[in-house]
Amino acid sequence: MRSDTLRLLNLLQLLSEIAIAVGYLLGLIPFVYLWSYTWVIPLVFVNLVFAILTHNGTTTKTVINIIMSFLSFIPVAGYVFRIVGIVISGLNISALSKERSRR
Image 1 (tube, rainbow, N blue to C red):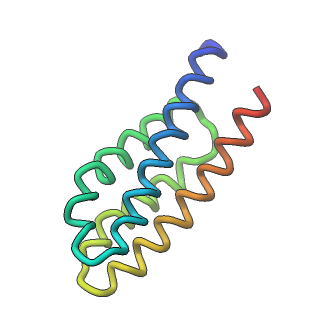
Image 2 (cartoon, helix red, strand yellow):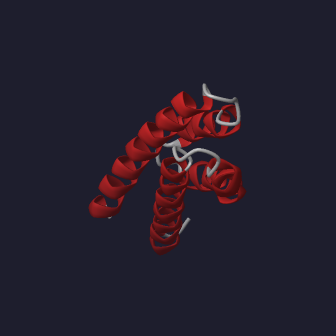
């Protein structure tokens, strides 16, 4: 894959990872996850495709984030999974930012 295509895919993954983190953060407000999941769940799957295409080392964390997005629906315990999702998104954002600065 061309380097400019990889850069674009990494940028798109970074932006969608930020949107996922915002969705999880908003989901910490009672009942707001019922609204924010409408973009969180599709974006975690889009991020998985990006991670597989770019081989940027975020695939495993992205799969875990997919699991967290569904576990976030569990009443009360869902807050723990949203916090874990925020942490995983933060780790991916950090890794993608470092990847962007290297290229």
